[in-house]
Length: 68
Image 1 (cartoon, helix red, strand yellow):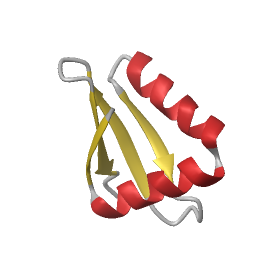
Image 2: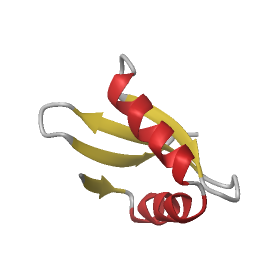
Image 3: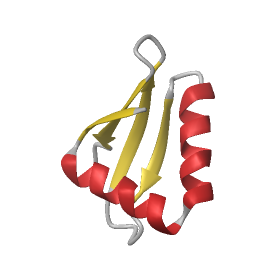
Image 4: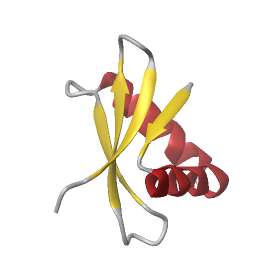
């Protein structure tokens, strides 16, 4: 699984991986199955919001900062 995107978002996703593995699995599954192929998530401290975006053609994930 390849992850790209916002460096801070990738750090936050790694922190989720260390502390909330089941939530990370949920994010991945949801991003793969949602109609728009993305799932919103927040950092552990709830300070920043991101999208985990799945590209079904390349099977890669991208982390994007949620606008606003």
